[in-house]
Image 1: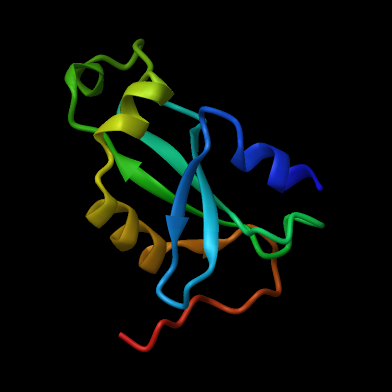
Image 2: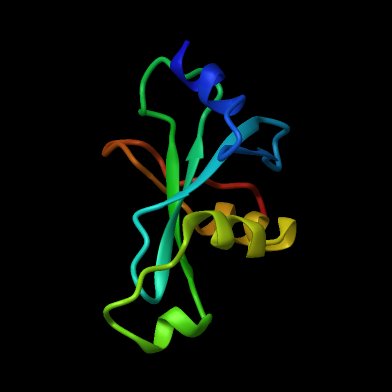
Length: 104
């Protein structure tokens, strides 16, 4: 199972969703002012249930269009509370998947 292997890698962070699902979180596709936060669903069979959100970066890189955010540094800066907010705002990777509704 690809995702279960990914969850054990150092750059994948565990995250428990509001319904108790244990997601794997990775930061990727950095620019100078934002980075994608991927939420990998634990079933790992397809990307159908995976979700993503954008995290806006305010570090020194955000003032230069030629610099890039370091994904490891971004992952350390994103707090658990910010992850919860990003998850609530996340969108499905696959089309045709319903938006997340946590009942908030």
